[in-house]
Amino acid sequence: MKITLLTVGKTDKDWVKQGMDIYLSRLKHYIPFSVVEIPELKNVSSLTKDQIKVREGELILKNVRPADDLILLDERGKEYSSVELAKVIQDKISYAGKDIVFVIGGAYGFSDAVYGRANSKISLSRMTFSHQMVRAIFIEQIYRAFTIMKGEPYHHE
Image (cartoon, rainbow, N blue to C red; front, side, top):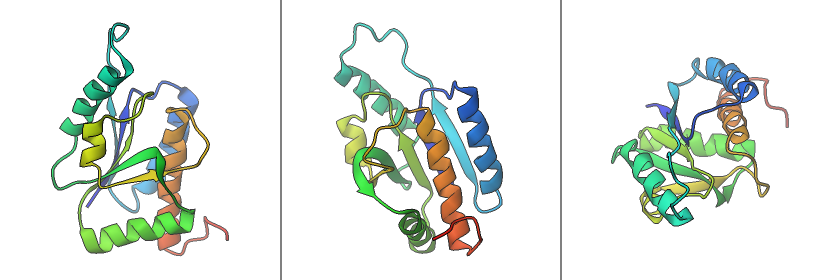
């Protein structure tokens, strides 16, 4: 079992990369975890938002296998506390046994095809974060979830 974070667009902020690298190096002690970056579309000025979402959606779905548990990071998703997220991940690892693919979409969100394929949606907050920043925040939350599952002293209640 492994976890993948699929993102639309490259991580182009050094401080975001540094934050991601800190938690990626810590996560490797718990589970195989990778980040897959789908390049942003080029020459999109003549495309509508919906056309961009459709094209990005096609690229997202090319990176997801039929057996993967696809979870979208979406503003309309369910919100969890860190402890609740740890329980969700633990249950998926224990009972489902599928690889988990979390997806951070592009600026306009997801296409209907991606929503249709998704197994679930989660929201990190009712607030909106930049697509760059949420990468580091989310990876930290996955690391936090594993320390909670292992009873380690990283998370404080």
